[in-house]
Image (tube, rainbow, N blue to C red; front, top):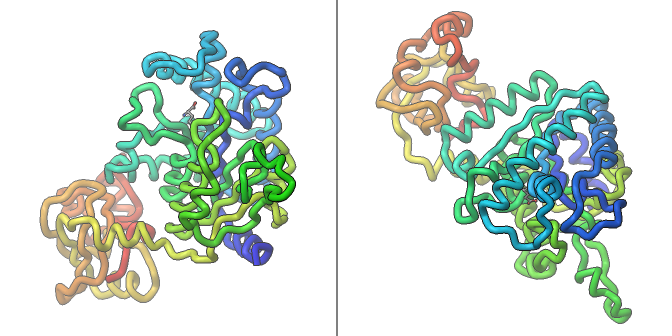
Length: 388
Ligand code: GLU
């Protein structure tokens, strides 16, 4: 079953989010204690090569990388386990630039460009910021650039943090509508028991190769983190997988310390733990658009546009808009009405009501010259639209 699912994933795969944990890019080989470790240039170089190969196979890659606090600790020589918030933020600030510099250095050698994206809790919660982040990511990918995402640790304190990069990477996978999230861990995947405690021969820990639903039992098995460098651990990975699964996106946890494992995922091998039921519908997000958000206005469309939306699964373009009702901002949820005023869809709009009123009925080229820098090809992108 798992093998077929993995083949299915590869068949549909266009965009993958790969999360690299601090442990995976730390210099294990130095033999230093975890709190003393820094970035391993060797490992980042090796990932650059692996990712080059993935891109050469035709996939788009977004990286979510931890390691800022670790790199900063090393540079500031701060080895105490419990840093206070300003110390952690200082580490993140100094370490983030080292982190990106290292990525830039090794990816450049593979002829790949990278870009830094720092996200905070607000960027995920606030629709405008969410859409902005999403558009930036799309633009980068279009230019063949690899976005390297981390939490904006420098300006966020614990209470308002996303908190760990497993959760962040799940959010990024949903935001970018990736078809796969790969979490690189320092263990093979999810075990039936903690392998570090599995000296007990009567109940040896076994790797679980497939989880089709994250039950309370699975969450319990995942337990809490043991690795002092890791913020999350298996528990947050399982919760991340639960989130992506509810958005129809599979997650695979593999041991990232073995570089060849990444290649194996793309060869369809039965490696690590796959979390997926085979369900690809983006249930939650569409549900959120259709039912959670309060529409701030409505857009009436002509017959052709209505048909294109309902029958052909197209995005809404300015040319098809005949009337704009209500006052709304970029990113608001709006109703889409057919010629007779009947609601046919809801979606998140890329123009505010003033601009939209100006561009309604215009061809894309005219819209572009009228709105300039605020131009979006779609008034509402298909991915942000739900038929009702
Ligand atoms: N954002 C943190 C860092 O770059 C790591 C968070 C995590 O590993 O989950 O150090």
